[in-house]
Amino acid sequence: MLNNLYLKDDNTYILNLDAALNFPEILDIDHSTPICKKLIIPIALYNQKLRVWETDDDDRGAIAIELSQYLIKITDNSTVVGVGEEFLFEFTYPDSGAKIILDPRNHDGNSSSNTVHTIACAKVWDATIITSQPSMITDAKLARVKAYFLSPSIYTGYRVVDLPLEYEQLWIKSTSVDISDWECFANSPLLPNEFVEFRFPTEAVKDFENVGMYNPESGTLDHLKYFNSSRVPMNIEPKNARQAMAFEATYAPIERGLTACIFYGAAGCGKTFIPLVGAIAQSGIDYTAYVPEEKKNQKYPASSMRRRENAIYDQIWACPPDRMMGDKLGAVPGDRWAKLRDNLDGYYHNIQAFLTAQRNKKEGGGQMTSFDIVRQAESIMKNINITSAGQLNGDSFTNTVFLLDEAEFFKEYQIRTATERINTGSRIFICGDPTQIRNAYGWYGNPLARFIRRVAGDKNVVILKFDGDLTQRDGAKIIYRSYHKAPI
Image (cartoon, rainbow, N blue to C red; front, side):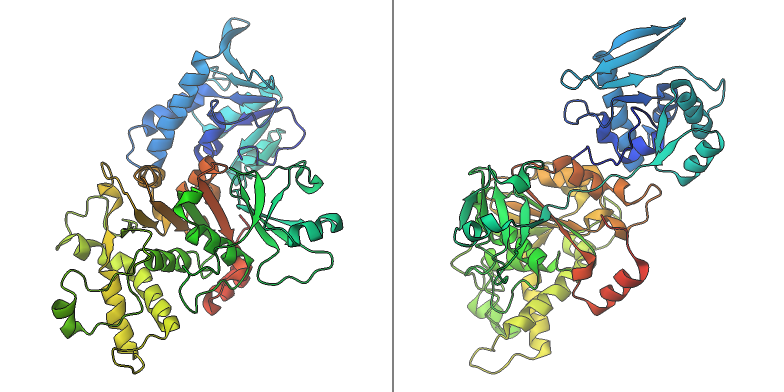
């Protein structure tokens, strides 16, 4: 997925430092492929800045360390090329012959300016600058140097395909289809667990029969089969194709191997509601039983809620972002629940909406009131274990559904650490919207966006983008229409 930089026809590019901070994996020669025939790194500028930033305890510091490690590896695998009395480091990809050149020369004399140094280097190499700073574009044009704005895309996890007429009946009449010889995928093969939404030339679409999911183990495109299974609670159903895809990932059995599910996109599309309800429904919590407060200790001493027999997960863990309290949380009074409870209000309100849809009855009959629903939501909330990003190291979660919501507020290493904790029989849901947080370098520099780019295509990962025009909330529709969020 790292080739999704929209470069023009030029063969030589200068990777400005600000662009590298947003897209550091470009220089990961073990896992990425070259984005152009020749990529120049003005290493004198990089080293000067990175040495200062490496001591920062933030995302920029972590990326500075990551970039330094990549540069060391490139240097170790490079040949030394002489240029007059000076030298360069040249790394050549063995398959494509594309080159990464580390240029340690300071072309602009003693200036430490990022702009001056990068433009001077571009003139020496007759190269085009890749940058994420609009001001750099302006300065480059004034210096008669070409510059392009960094425009990576994030893997959406699905594609919309016009189904050729000759394949229509084959798809409709089969539950699983070998697509290895289908021309519509010849130039762009499906990635593991990628979804396809077909547009039929003649047939009317019903029950999401036009949506399939690619199975990397069998090599087939399979019809959705879990979105309406018995695991899904009553009155909970997908409202559009994207939600049906999310249901498929949420309710798929553990044997399917979907260890990490990443749902991202605009607010109000269900990316939090769907995995939360799925976690409750599959963890054995009896959400259909209303137990009055005064009877809990008498009838159910071990738990405030009864357990369902078809439980897939033994427990639910949630990790809210620490943006309000800091990683250590030591200054906040109370136990862990008291420290983090307020950050789970979104779950609490979603559970109330879920219970309202269930139309539960009180013991002995009678419709539950809004007050009853609030108390039942509180009972369910107490079955959700809470941890913080700063307390994840050393943990291992077995037979657990792990919820990492508002992931755009996490640091990249925190998302990575949470995913590393997932063990046998468990699944992690990572939900968020990179566009909801301010970032000096743009949404593509958000830690969640960087994490998605790194894990895209893994056989145990599902990634799904929720489109803003499918949002369910009235208020979210206003914001999406009015602010014209950049498509991602």
